[in-house]
Length: 379
Image (tube, rainbow, N blue to C red; front, top):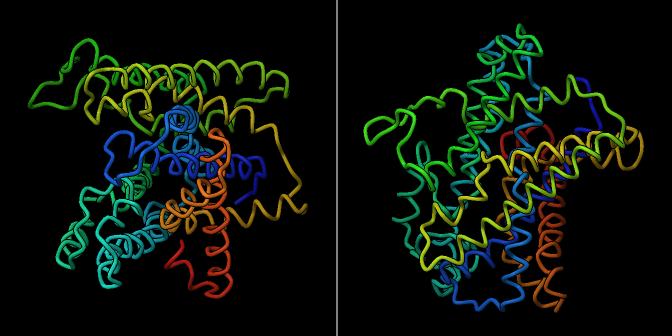
């Protein structure tokens, strides 16, 4: 596969945004539910919201990269599934099991159950029993626990891989105009979360016994697949034009994400769905931010043989493993950033840097030590 270093840069930005997103978890989770019993000062709460809104494009950027790199699929369906799905399936199973066993391990070490909420901000329970861990492990084929909250992405990713060869057949034959029509309808579907919240819960044919309404077949992350493919294939603009188009989109999308979140949090009570509403990945504001980042960063093309190019290649090689293991370091980043007594605005990005260094170092060393066998553990 031809290497596009500008896509490597986008992957780096997506990874930093992702780690920053998860670095906000101890702040946001304690503000929302207070499970860990950690009091978050008002100024830190403000910056947690600001950073939380800013990093929403992290997952869409990864999906756009998948579309840019893999559409149209050039492999036979069975070979594609074997190469792509198995490469993520086994690390997903191994690391999910390790995450779900961790509360039990902490109990064996004599730690108080409160450590569970410290390590895993969104955990549903602080149960340290082996039976609780085994119950979660048994349900891995169809259920993820918030002990490993980032694993939701793998279910979605495997679904996209299953879909890609089928979608690819249309992408390969569709004209540019047809792809633009698809993206236009998909963009319309991104309004649905707001429509169902503020206008009508059941709309366009949906009801208690039917979730498959008018726009169902155009909705979801498949739009990001096509958007990444479209920008990569068709958009050829100067750096000035990329920034002139992308920067306003980024600012507007961010403003909606932040102000919408602040509005929800100002309500007397909030459901979990409402808390996430303006940060939902398939919303117009997040789509604008994601397209803006992809469009602007695409202009950065480091040379493959340069130091930056080699580091980016290493990140590409280690990226999936980094994703698998990084959540073990979230609390370390949180504690480190607070111990350094940094300014409020800097604590979350500093925490993300700690997580990045730890996870990338371990993933890179493991890749070197295990060689080709590392694919079964780190992808």
